[in-house]
Amino acid sequence: MNPNIKVEELTKIYNLYDSPVDRLKETLKLTRKCLHKEFFALERVSFEVYPGETVGIIGKNGAGKSTLLKIITGVLTPTSGSVAIHGKISALLELGAGFNPEYTGLENVYLNGTIMGFSREEMDEKMDKILEFADIGSFIHQPVKSYSSGMFMRLAFSVAINVEPEILIIDEALSVGDILFQAKCFKKFQELKSSGKTILFVTHSLSNIIQYCDRCIVMDRGSKVAEGDSVTMVDLFKKILVSPDDTAVLVDELKSKQAVNLSQLEGGGMLKDKLQLNDTPIEYGNKEMEIIDFGIFDRNGTITNIIEADSPVKIVMHIRANVDIFDPIYAFSIKNMRGVEITGTNTMYNSVDTGTVKKGEVVEVSFMQHLPLPSDGYLLSLGCTTFTADDFVVFHRLYDVAPIEVISEKNSVGFFDPNSQITLKPAIKE
Image (tube, rainbow, N blue to C red):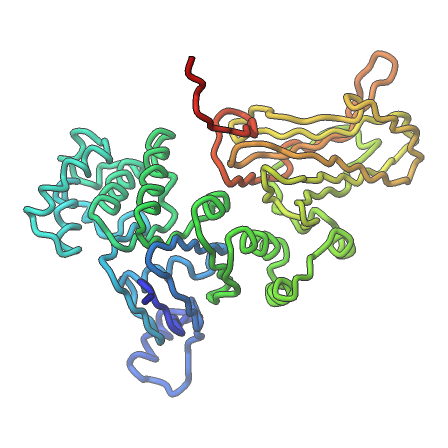
């Protein structure tokens, strides 16, 4: 079977100058000195995508994902290497690509059709489906420059998926508009996947990678560092986020099936230094006990902000007593991005006897649990308090101290995943 997309040794180099004057001097050959530095946006990237496959690409910002897609779709020219495409391609890249802001939405639909090789009559036949899916009403007759970003992407997405492509390339565009439109997008995406279309999909949503992609490519600093099944690649990417300077080591560990365990990670300094943190958490308390460190660990013992809904997760706190403390209460809670407290617990609710902590002692508190939450972003809060006589005392609270991204292979609604086990059988006829 021949691949629909074949990328070989693809490299893209940009010349970077300290000033416009240096660029001018070098262009006009006014000096023999080299006044630029080479930046490899892509370096010798190779892979293939076969008919019917859905392949995800993940990587940090600046990893080269969008540059790669622009070269595949012909928006950019590579410095070296080659791309071979077999099949009609439709692409949805960043906001603005392929649309003229001065034209109306309707004019832009016809313009995009012309670019893709369709006649006006052929686009007339597709128009009803495009307008119905975009659902922007009379704005279709207004200049695109007057659209909100959500309206723009609704129309662009509708055009991209309704022109019967053999290959669909999407760069971070399945989460546009309101929740109902998002549901339409994912339903259509699933229909295209089920009908055997070839899909190349760049996203920051690791849940979508696991849920929709047959395999995944991990990119870092312009290079393809690994390729494999989606779950394994998501695990690798989570480790790269924590230890960006150890990418080569992590890839070697993956190849030799050596896991990075909790003891190895804890031996490398502060746990929280390996996490993405909130720059402006809410912090208060008298600091008689102080939270000096904390970590979030996934099922592999990797410290990370990204956890899987159906796997165990451990939240760890290190708390130092600055005076003698009797029976402290240790707590954590999780909010959604709207500030609604979703879940949490503490040692008092769980009837844990925390005893007396002497001045200078450091206590490690671990909460091990599953968090069956829908795929979304959340915020972690930590606390250490107590009751003295009739008074409630706050030693130290860190509200919204770190983001948590929950990923899941399935969708759910509401505040938690009911983890339903669904069975089907013939109904008994009387």
